[in-house]
Image (tube, rainbow, N blue to C red; front, side):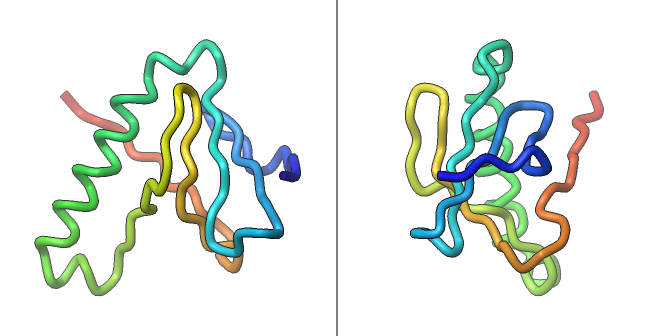
Length: 92
């Protein structure tokens, strides 16, 4: 695993591995672990919405959560993209 400060977000840090071309480890910051279940739920909900809409499915892909631990996930990541983060705000 390698540390890259540019892969740090508001919830946690992504760690890259040369062994997994399309996956990274995401660890939540200690003070944000409480937000982890909701973040994962929102990813799954976004996937369901996009997969059920043929137009959205053509142009949007949501990262897949492959494994999950108490404060981490293994998730999809495209190392060829210059931006893998889209901040989504929930209005309500």
